[in-house]
Length: 178
Image (tube, rainbow, N blue to C red; front, side, top):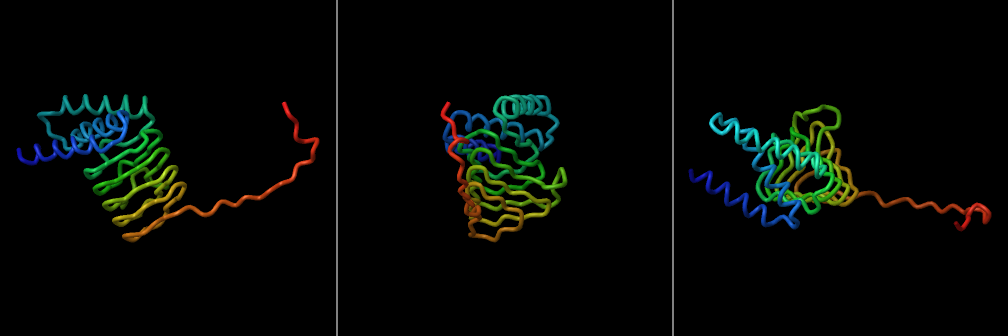
């Protein structure tokens, strides 16, 4: 009973941490649907309804694919709830921050065999963590546009390469004003 009350308090504080109403709804539906993965037979019909709501709103309406089987610690924050994909085989620690257009998951296998993300990890816009056997340490920041495909140790940054800009001169007749 104490664990249930503690879990409810943590979930409510987690919902308060999320910035927008859409993010709050996504996290709430994910948490309610994840009760279904615990397989308590008494609550099966109720938790199944949560899974259906989670699928409808999060996947079909908002474009966010987070399986109810994914294990995510408390403190989960989605800054902009749009186009987020997290594979069901991932185990994610506490205080995970993710922004829009991010992918976390396996590269070749549908369910990665060893995919662990530590506590206090933050992902920037358009960043990816891809691999089938990967471990991201604690206190890691994946910068905007970066792709992490190997293990990352604790207290590290992953940043994208500098863009390569090549100028190309066009002949004057090729540029037309409409």
